[in-house]
Length: 406
Image (tube, rainbow, N blue to C red; front, side, top):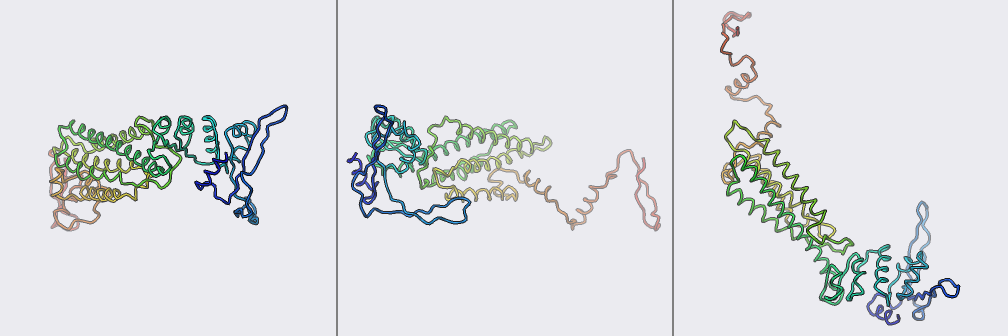
């Protein structure tokens, strides 16, 4: 025990001026109850550091005077820990709150200690032997410092036999999340393009060569930047998913597939016109699929708690730029761009925009004004079974009006 306390002081876990209290627990014996004896590891120093803490009560209008509390650490062995856990369960969390040294513990006692610490802290565990496997599995973050037995239980194994590998663990978790994000995006990318091509095949059409080229170079190439999200600064208690075949991952992928399928089918049915030989289905599905690629890439680019938020990634600026570019060429067609992308100039989206925002001013050209009047005249054009007669106007005899009779 004294050796463990000395190592803790040398490592900086226990400052030289802090007090160490050793808890020795004894089981019931000869009719006597279990008991704990407390003793100092060494003679308390007169220069023991004191910490000022402020204690306030809820619903009180004043704050108590700050009181001083001695900085102390508890130390105990595995036998004492087991007795305290069995006979003094209410005291256990109070001890582990300031517990620093736990020596000579069995594997099950280490696991129980981790579970108790998880009641008050987020717990990380480092181990290098078979007796650490249970605690490594139970801890929020387990790091094996050995490539032998403990590496089987720990999700992360370090070849460096010290805790300097924690930043590497943070980076590794971020890299694992990035790989899952890229996998999900590539799966959706293939499915979205498959849906578009299948719908177009039903009308004997397909995406053009330059449309495929635009998707592969201008859009998909930018997804490489999704891996540039830096790792989160802290090691969180949650573990990243450990496999591709998991409920949340499959649910997110299937949900996005259904959403993309629904929007493409709605678009495909909306623009269909049997009396028009122009193929608006191709252009409409091309633009919808381009937006879906960008949306899926942003949705699957996860940030906290393992990576920095996506807005710190330059990929977001590229995605926003592509959004504006696609909106521009969709609502305000440019002949050269549409010719390159093999799209139709008269887009359905442009028609919808014109329908939602109709022109309220009267056309200046005479023929347009006359055509507008004729479009609302119910008696024009004349029916084949009717005759038209000239009749003088009542107000003056020089003018005539048109009447239609059967």
